[in-house]
Image (cartoon, rainbow, N blue to C red; front, side):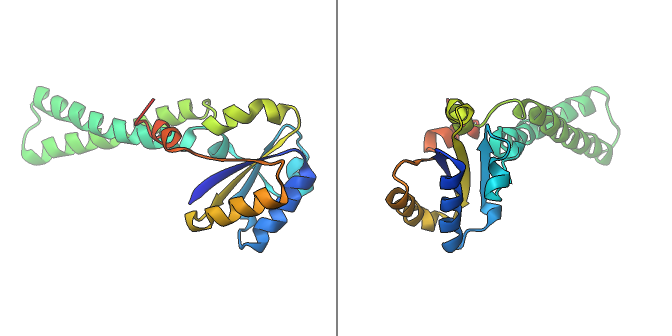
Length: 177
């Protein structure tokens, strides 16, 4: 799936784009709206964007588990060695237990941080949203990307369309600056 961001000037344009996307087989589950106008999603019948769409929560949680689990395993290994846990099963239990604890602690702490970090694209459009524009976040199969972009540009030339770039994806995944 590819996420496309449509910055529309008003709710009527948003509703029109939604109908066109529905005609292409995309459902309401694929479309989310961020707007400074609380009635925007009510007027269009679309889902209000949640914290998962507007913040770094999901990527932060994944990074937390990826970092916390190996750190927990290392701490478990050190703890088992220092505490001289008897037997291989006792050592394995301490190591695995600390690995699980590390993963869960990384998940929890990273999610707490990620919920306060806005998504890169949301941050970019924040000023426009405050001025009354509507940001649509549309998750589409990659094979439909060209068709959707072409259709929207043809029918709504005033709409800005963006997607997550490779650099932005790498940054969100913790693999780049």
